Length: 314
Length: 287
Image (cartoon, rainbow over all chains, first blue to last red; front, side, top):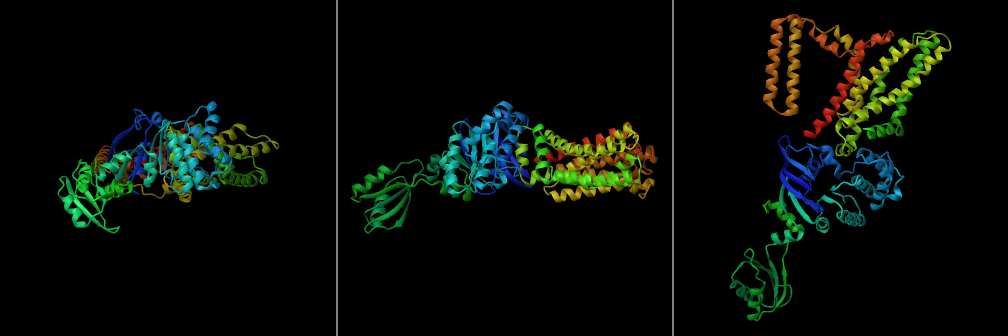
């Protein structure tokens, strides 16, 4: 549905987005994750045709955003970082204006506006001036605006920023619901949000893609199969047994948290499942395992890892 | 385009802008009409319109300062530019909305000649000709204001710059008599123009070779023309200034004459600035 190929954006000497390529499939929700200033908004502005890339192409449903802008833009609804609202209009005036500029036929207008206002729950404020609305309502009006004309693709830049916790949950549910009928790209710097909503995640830092995959996939790949153990033995006894096992690179003692036990983290060689050998060896030696837990990285840890070490994980 | 037009027109009358423009315009126009036609019992309506043209300096910035700068400040330009509209439609829609407000105001002032007709014969066709000129001059100024509004996201700056530029155009005729007319000054001025174009190109495209090429080609042209016919450069500065003299072209209308060349001039000037506005917006997306 969306194909981004080798997109680069330079502002003079500064490179804001550096050779980014990815595709988004039909009906997928893609999460765009990165610290502030990583190039998320710039990328989204390029995808929606607000600014043009220095190099590279963007195609929406096979239509190039620069060569066939009118056709391509019809397929995109965009909620930018700051919702583009005319504060002196009422909500329904505003949505009517959006219908005008998105060329929605007159006869479908009333019905489609009513439906959108119902979905994003702004029917009760439809005759109020936008400048008098709360932040949460403004954000929802911004989302309503993106849905006008029923575009196939929704691009949402930080849709939950500035909302209170309950509104955040409502907004997430709404996006998930929209995801059934739309292809969605959303950006965020809030990790739980992305892992809760998205089918796939792209992590971007300093204008480059540093990691991508499903949330589960990312955490497994970057976690590297480490195990956290609690063993009823002394440090030395447990370490002696484990150090004789093949396939273990590193044993990391974490001290004792319960009397007569020891906690440790062991790191296996890549792609080796060492849970069974560890269990067998320790039970033969007569040291019961009280706890064994795979150390998959949480998204926070992945995020910190890829954005601070800049390791290429693709 | 119609969507933008409707929205702009509505904004003029849902904010004070439209009323301030109309109110101020009608107040001054009424004042002028009373002084120069009613109290002095003169039927020279076109002369009054000619004197009234100074009002553009004040009211045109009111009308145009908001047009594009406010979109940029509120970041709603992103909405328009990511919609299926193209830039020309956006700019033309806005321009036509401003023209419409101006035209409505002008139609109200038509009451004045109607009032005059109660007291005697009026030269109907001359007055219509005068109105056409007045409208064309105004729409040219509005196009300039529209362009300046696209340069900044601050309304106040847009208004002040528009006022200054219009003021400059106002006094440009008197500049013509004081600039040097020697051949050398003409050559120097042409060279300065070429360098300015090259610098502008460099700032836009960041390509030193293109700019150098322009300078070399420009220098060759200047020297070539100098070798062929150096009289071209005598009074060259004055001639260039005369191209921008909007007011001198209004004199015919003031006398009640309707001639083609000033009409074509004003329309071309307006189209050029509307086009430049679209270019300016387009350029911002590329830089």
